[in-house]
Length: 188
Image (tube, rainbow, N blue to C red):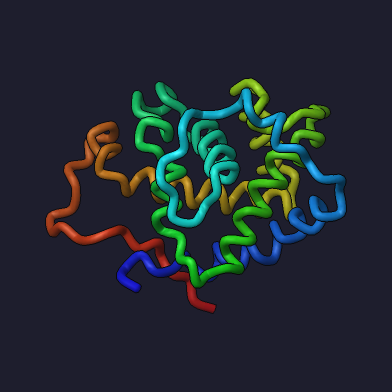
């Protein structure tokens, strides 16, 4: 499995216990057509390990909202293709985590915008509205905050461990080179 084998159990529980509720809500809702997604594409999807093209597209928008180009740093999530980077660390055996991640993305894409009175998908919203929605999720408490915290945590971790980002915050890298970063494990 290597050193990128798992995400922390706290993150796994966050996705499983919290965002699966959102997945259930989506399953109960009418089917959502993917035709509406055509004009919100972030470009061609790279070769993905586990995420499908729609998951990748939504995760790209989420990471771009959290870490925009010319935000805190000139380099942003899209510059390092953060969604694809996260995909490389997902393990095929961890079907519960993958299902939870997809549930969180579907919740954010289709249901969360209603919290700020928007009927369309998250990915179609302008940057300012997406930022406002994420702040609303952060402050809402419960499942909404759990989804926000999990997506923000995984995005920040894999952005800050990407060597392309290090010059942006004057980090020279570790003294001893290692393989892929290991997301910290939280034990019960």
